Amino acid sequence: MTASTPIDARSQAVIDGIEAIDPEFVLHLPSSTLKAVVGHFLGQRTRRTFPIPREEEGVGILSGLVIAGRRAVMIIQDNGLGNLITAVATFPQAYHLPMLIVTARRGGLGEYNSMIHNVSERAEALLDAANFRYFELDHRSPIEEWKPTIVRAYEYAQITHRPVFLLVNLMGG
Amino acid sequence: MAQELLRRVDALGAIDDAFPTQPIVLTLGGTVREMIATRGRRPNHLYVLDSMGLPVPIGLGLAVGLAENPRHDHVVVVEGDGSLLMGFSSLTTIGLLKPKKLIVVILDNGVYLATGGQPTAASLVDFTAAARACGFTGVDAEGADGLRRALAEAKRSDGPTLIRVRVGTSTPPTDFFLEDPAVFGAAFTSWVRTP
Image 1 (cartoon, rainbow over the protein chains, first blue to last red):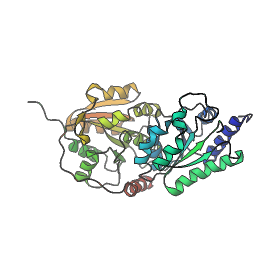
Image 2: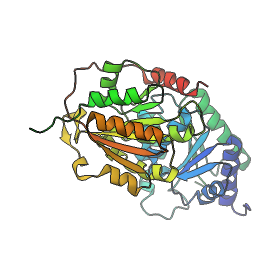
Image 3: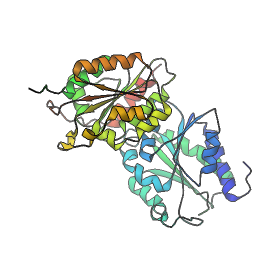
Image 4: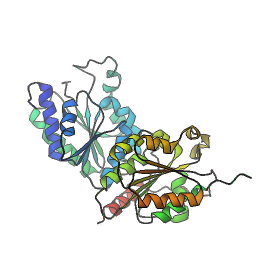
């Protein structure tokens, strides 16, 4: 992919970060903002990339993969966070299963959907209320910091034995 | 006189007998408590205490993750009709991924027993037809002998397989299971990963 726009550059940085984690499995919800990222992994034969129809189902599958000792990452959008809170709180958080959930931001500058901001603008508040750890990358983050931060977020999940969310805002802020 | 339905606790015994050394993911509520009360704590049993709708996805992830693991021939999920209906989309993902080791056993009592016996929609749903529509094997089993035969056949065949068996609503007295999931979950993970 040629990084000709800020969104392209951030998409490439997310790809590079996930590539550096080297997951065997990539689970994904549909995401228009992460279309290039998901498309990249769907085009690979070295990993198994597959869709999940609901966020909480993905949490369950990811948990099973983690228990089996496999490296895996899940990609979702922040407007699906409400779907997975109970699933994360009652299983991987309670059972101390490390996992990285890369979460694309919606809402905010550049958003075209007139109602998605109702949930997306409260993403941090939802995660705080649920006591889920997260890190953030957006237009304030130097692009060279994206890849190492993604890797460190994955490692942080392993070290702290819990789910970690990485909020990535490809549209800016 | 109508024949009495298979007791859930007896169905659990049949599953435990069929898979004494394979990973078994147990759904929440009385299923976990009855298995512990009658079969004791087992290293190959994962107790899902409070994640309705998640046992099938968890087992699906395990079966995919253990696909090349020579120690584990099967991954069994023991699910109820109510919890399956909460995570019903997982049948489509099973059909998509088709993990050969996955066996899902639906203990269908037609009610949400743990919350007072409110009826589920299971009486209107043909679970085995749903499995077949999603691209994998679905089998109805009847009674203890029928369940044993279905489990034996599933062991001999490539999965994924869904077995649905009707069970009654009688339950033996059991204690609450109040241990820390971080502790027994870690023990199960360690057992799964042992070469």
